[in-house]
Length: 355
Image (cartoon, rainbow, N blue to C red; front, side, top):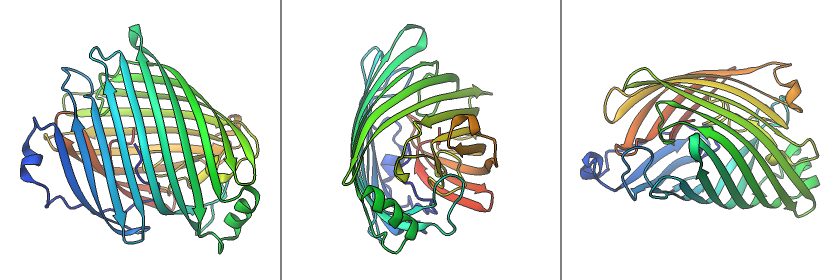
């Protein structure tokens, strides 16, 4: 789960945590104050909530996640995300309420990245509902509905952005629905140590700006494989191929690579186009109950069509990171990653694994 789209340098201080919350493995709720700093947003304060609603023998617990943060550069992020399971784990009910108001950066379309990028501010409110049915033989069917409204500000001094918004306008309302089919043999998705996920999804939607209307059709195929060497060490692999129908679209609706989950080491959404391809590997080790580390590498590309992926220059990244297990029961974690790209870097402290 990606809580910020900026390339981050975050210093998180946990000295103010209530010791009982840190040590109580049986605690149903952990509330963590967070202090952080990013080169994009300045000094920030926030709070993070993990509340477990049950305790299954295997698999993820039903949870409610929450986040609220504010920075010295007037960046605000608020998140509320329930993940609920039926008693027999056949049904999963999910949702997301998300709001943000923060500075962002546009690096251009296709592989021609602007250096430096052009800055703007984005205000977004988003609501989504998700329903998953776990069929026999580890098959699943998933449906999701999503509503989003955005407004873009402070781009008057950016020539490429001004050209984009002269065509599309600075306000957006979008609704979409996604249907996914797949196979999932992982015992849980929070921090899986074994199993295979294969997921084929198709998304249809409509986007209305204050000047134009567009339809969205996007298809994606994703696979994730986890191999456990022992109780402490796991190899995680990810492959992703996605494409959106080639029609005139504003830059913020194109697919992108870069950021805290897809090709760490580059700025968020640094490479944008109609098709993306990605392969990543990560070795994860958890030598103690609370602390761990991981080493990762990835290759990715963007193109105007999936058949043209890898025809040009591939973007590679590699790095290492450290994990702090916030909730021992569910293995929820904060991770601090250091990613290096080609003449680029990224530092991140975020909640959850990259994949």
